[in-house]
Length: 110
Length: 369
Image (cartoon, rainbow over all chains, first blue to last red; front, top):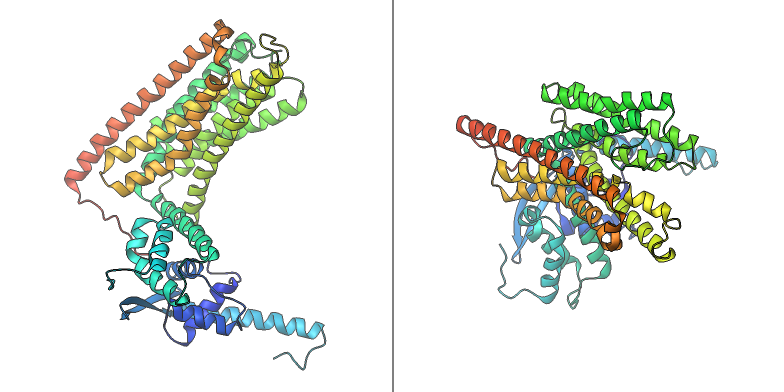
C-alpha cells in the first residue's frame, strides 16, 4: 500500500504536515493554499486519509489542545512518511523533466 | 469534552450525519471532526451542505467496512467462518452424494426428480462423480483436522464443478442440465470460499479487507439471484395462462429445480454458524454485532429464496409428488446441517470454557485507529 503513486489528497496532506504538525481544519486550509484553491478537502475525506496514513505509520497524532471549547488534535509526519514523500517528489520531478524534454520546454523544467 | 450546553443547529445536524460512522470510531473522533466541520463552515450557516453530507455518509460506511474487515482477523470471526464452512461443507457433501447417486444410477438429479430431459453421457457422469467426490472427501479431511487438505479439496471440487458446468452448458445449450448444474456449482463453490475465509493464519489487512468484500459480495449476489428467480417466476405466471404447464416451463425449471432451496439452506447454515459462534463465545456486543453484520445479507438471501416460490406460486401444491419429494429431501438436508451445527457449537462452547479457565480474556481494542 505504501508503494506506488500517492493519490493527490494524500500527497497534499503529507506535504502539509511536512512543514509542521497541524490539526484537521489547519490541514484543510493549508491544502487549499498549496493547491491554489483547486483541492478543497471535506472532513470525511480528510479523516479517511488521515486514518490510512496513521495506520500505515506515515503520520501520527501529535498532541491535543482545546481551543474555544473545541478539541483540536494535531498530526505530524513520521520518518517513514517523510521518506515516502521524498520518493514521491523525486518520481514526480523525474516525470515532469521527461515530459518537459519531450515538449521542448527544457528552459521551464527544473 | 464539549462545552456549550446548547449546541448550534448546524453542529447538531453534523453530529447526526456522523452517525454513519461506527460508534467506537465516533467515541474516539467525533469531537475532533465536529471542531473541523464547524471551523470550515461560515458562521450563519444552518444546514450542512449536501456535498458534506454525502462525503460523511460515504466515508462513514467505508470506515464501518474497514473496521469490520479488521474484526474478521480476530480469532472469533475466523472461528465463525470456520463453523459456517463446515456446515456448508456438510450440506454440499450431502448434495454431492445425492447428485452422484441420481446422475450415475438414475440418469437424473435426485434433488429434483425428473428434472433432466436427457441423461448425461457416460464420460460426463464419471467426471461429475469424481468432481463431487471431492466434497465428502473434504468434509472427512476437515473432520480429521487436515485443514489445508480440506481447503484444497473443497476448492478443487468447486472449481472443477464450475469448469464442468461451463463445458456442459456450452456443449448443449438447449438442455436444461446446464442450469441445474449451475445451481450445484453455486453450492459447491461455497465451502472452498468459506474455508479460505476461515484461514486465521497470515492474515494481513489487505487480505482481511478482501475477505470482508467477498462476504458482502456473496451476500449481494445471492440476493440478486433470489430476485432474478422471483422475477422469472412472476413473469412466467403473468405470461402463461394458469394450468398450462408448457408456456412457463422455463421459469418453472429455474425456480422449481430445488437449487434455490439448496442455496437457501446453505446460506441459512452459514448465517446460523456465524450467529451461534458469535453468541456463544463471548458476550461482547461488538463482536456479536460483527457476526450479525456478516450474516445479514446471507440471511436475507436465504429467507428471500425460501419465500420466493411461496409468494409467487401459491398453487405450488398442485405440482404434487415431485414437489413433495423435493421438500422432504430439503428438510433432511436442513436437519442434518443444523445437527452438525449444534454439535460444533457445543464443542466450541466446551473449548471456550476450558480456555477461559486457563487464560485471561483478550482485549477487544487492538491498536487504535
